[in-house]
Picture 1 (tube, one colour):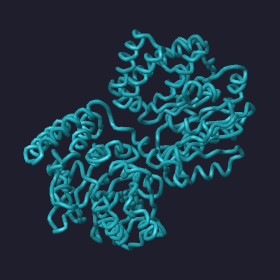
Picture 2: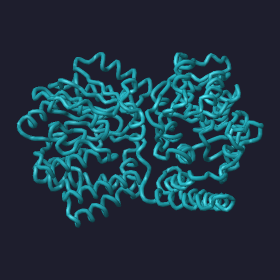
Picture 3: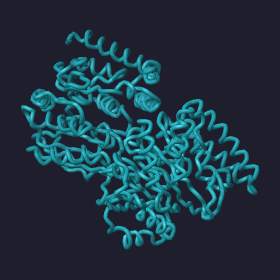
Picture 4: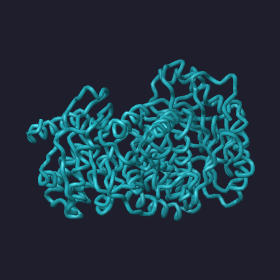
Length: 614
């Protein structure tokens, strides 16, 4: 199904169409036939069947499964439109293509709909030098009227230049759009993440596109037309009935938790939402149902957040060996001789960085490992996937590939990978760092000598491993390692070698973004694990662009709060220590990036001088 359109715009890679369906086989047939009949045909079509039970599975198997470029993904439970589009985008990210065309199953695009979207994207880039991250189609109802449910409003506060540039290519600048028919940039999707699968239904497209577009350009393209075959003609203020609580809950989550909207935008959209809710309730013939839904949604939205997308998608896929599973293999006895290296790779890693990292822990080591467990954390870009295949084929070290169907984050990935280690001794390695040749020669005997967990000092670099920017020193006295861990990470995760049994006895890796290592090592120390550090730097640690930005923000603050609560709950810290950590470490997470960078440098400079090992 590769595009053979001779008029396909230059510079545009393949388009991956993503269609999500649930129990609408007749509408789905019209949608898919129209997608496959485009004048600018998609290079791939990913169809997510949300556990339909109306014969959709048989229809897809008989009519579409054998077509080139068509991939059918069937879930074992209905995860809603939010989960369906998150899953479809995850599979789109795993192959060739630089854009994804997202469509509901009740959307029938006209023959030139995709060509118009691609053409507008290309023309705008040619005109302005900026590629829009989203281009939305015009959605009409079955009688040809513009569908009010899916007509995006012009972007509030768009500059005159922005409006003029959009008009020059026949478009209008917008801020958000629906999943009825939009073309989204896959590189930008990798940056901001998937739609929130935990939303299930409603506002998942609003939250995702707000996040995708923030700081970038998006267009409404009236020249691209699709027919949205809803049962009724109506807008966003139509009476939603008993499902109103989903609208309320998801809006609360969007305004309270999402990074998609700025503070002024939250005020603007929040006010508009409140007015629309009031209109909807006043016009309803069943106000009591909507009022109950309002209360239910507010309680649900304020009492917690959506389930993590990785969890939702993993459970929805189940143990199907065709797509993989996050479930580890059954426990097996591990060998005391030899050792394994545990690595994880995800779509954001670079192929050349991975190759250098892999070589540094295999061919370049004076004592090479006996196994490498390489976790593929979700679908990968084709270039990275091809490089991994080349590297694995060329190495003399046995490699165990653990492919996970969705990107679940570092903690779950390492947990799954550790279950596949054939050896009791395991060394960690990141996919963008470089281990020095004598690392394992130094560390492995220390673990064999009785330690459960051994780290080392690091040498930090930015672009060139030959140019060192900072030495990250460590304490070597076990008492200092244990005491210091109540305030900071005293073992450098990219440098550690550990006993797998000791890690698992402490609960293993957990899903705590960016702090899963600190939580694990603290639990091990609290459980009595014997720990040590090598004063000599054994790993070159990459601190490229954005490293200080990633050490802060609301996401890290939430992880920090969860970490400190767990420390206090288990008795690892006192109440006073917890308060100190919340003030200092929590404050660091929300400080401006410049202050974080200065504070981080000062902190490690003190550690270096104080250790006497500079």
